[in-house]
Image 1: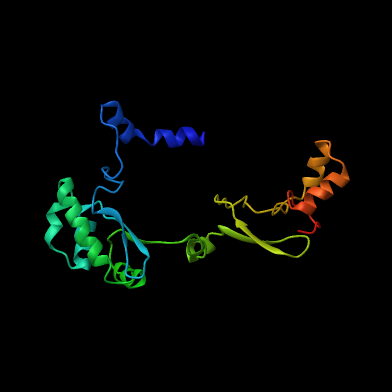
Image 2: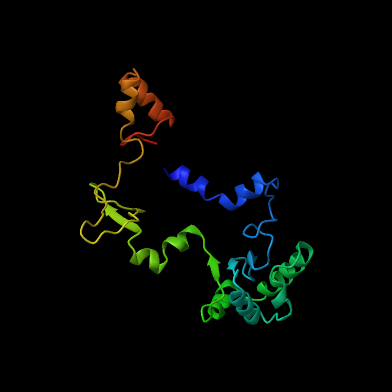
Length: 200
């Protein structure tokens, strides 16, 4: 199912391969070969993802960066692409990610911040869509998990059980493998296995 769907998305690249040209890293339109579709570091060591494939987005990007020169060279040859990327990289290093996003949030240029996982999961849209769920366990501990991605008006999805803690079924599994209770306790004492209530 899912694997089949992912492989089917390789149509463009597989076509090139079957035609005799195996795709190489950094030479693909969406894989680092073009200045208009790349990732750039900002002054604070963070990154911005640029996906300005359409000409209007590319023009807007260059306007915000105050780099009018390469407007007509969006899909220039590789050597020129490297030069343009260098110019964009230099310009992006002049401001922080937040400073750039303050400018890009006002226009349509297909520029977004590259977020670490904690920041991405704290995003207001992620929260509003219920994609992170907090659930209390029987002991009262609150744990966070990913929520269901599907949304049905008449049959809303929910989280019924947050899952068992690490090692919750360990004793049962080890006994099923033929280990005696004393052997299991010894393994837990050595830290080889983690069991609820065992000293670590």
